Amino acid sequence: VTEPPTWDQVAREHGRFLYTVAYRLTGNHDDAQDLVQEVLVRVQRGLATYQPGSMEGWLSRIATNAFLDDVRRRKRRPLDLVGNDIERVATGGPSADEALALEQLPDDVHAALRGLPDEYRIAVVLCDVVGLNYAEIAEATSAPIGTVRSRIHRGRGLLREVLAS
Amino acid sequence: VTEQPHLGELLSAHLDGELSADEAATVEAHLADCDACRAELDATRVVREKVRAAPAVDPPVGFYERLVRTRRWSRTQAAASVVAIAAAWILVLGFVVDPGRSTVKPPVDETRVLLSRSDVADSFVVQPAGLHRVDPNATPLPKSVLELPRSSAFEVNGGLLVVFGSHVAVFIRQADVDWSTLHGGLRKPVAGVNGTPWESTDTNVTPALVYQGGDWTVMVLGPEGTDLEQAAREIGDPATQSFIDRVRDACGSVMDGFSLR
Image (cartoon, rainbow over all chains, first blue to last red; front, side, top):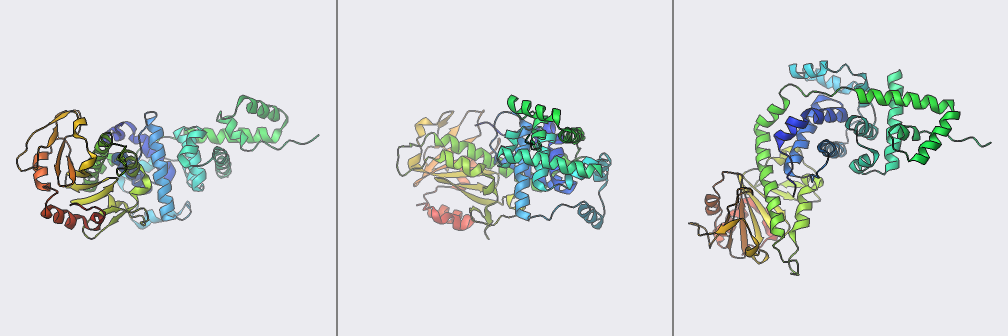
């Protein structure tokens, strides 16, 4: 039995990576923090069987699964670009920490990603942020490779339109 | 001349190096003759590079530190490690189960599956007594369900796992355990504990103490530093009615499937 990594190992060595993936998947800091926490809970509980190999690939798969579970559970409303900002204002705006994090991201790519349908965003993030190959993405998302290929290309097509406008 | 269809998603696959040599050659041949596909390839390449160049995102300052400091997380983490440790030990015990016994299902695979399936994590049902029961048909609950209260129980194949505060006891039918194959420890009498318990002495493994009572083998597990002998005295002899009542009180209906006598 391969020991799953400890919490502080993950945080120390892969914290930034994990947070980036969570932020790109969820589209906002609040959900990203929830997702990171959920990933760490799953890591600790050994819910995901650790296979020696790329730690970051493994963490990404857990993050993807947790994100998909959350999507299914909440049947979340389609992400729209203003929704989160409205909530943020309603709850008093970002904390100082969050404001700092936000300042680091004058990121039109992120805004465009956030507007993608979940399945396109997941495919593009796993491919271009995480660096998984198509077979790995297919495994992580339980989708055939042909579907992955199509999602990536269509996701990029939509990003292109948004970024060009 | 038949007009060739445009390349579409093959363009992304081409950029990502996901095409075979033959496919790539076909794509290149098409590109040489097709302005529209060349333009789409270039535009796709630009957006691909933009996403790849997007900077890593730092979590809010102190995010991970706060996470580990919060009570909720610490409790979850402590309980979770203990459950993970128990799972590992159940795997060990799996090797000592005689697979030829028809009444015994080897716990290895199902236990591992049970604890590793993410959908099971969503299937704990909170009972009034603070019990989390694995119920595959249950409606998913919020994350707070992961906070294990003082007495929680999990059904694991062939046994029952009860979390008592910081330690865990796993109950396995006595007939399923072959003591002679337990290594890295020794049997010795422990005051107040039934029979001659086996206690791990190998510092490389999770501390464990195994004893028997009635029809059951009890394996007590805990993190480094747990006083397992004291824990075993608290858990008591599974052959006694007072023990059965106490566990039943703590664990409610999850015990219904287990006749402890």
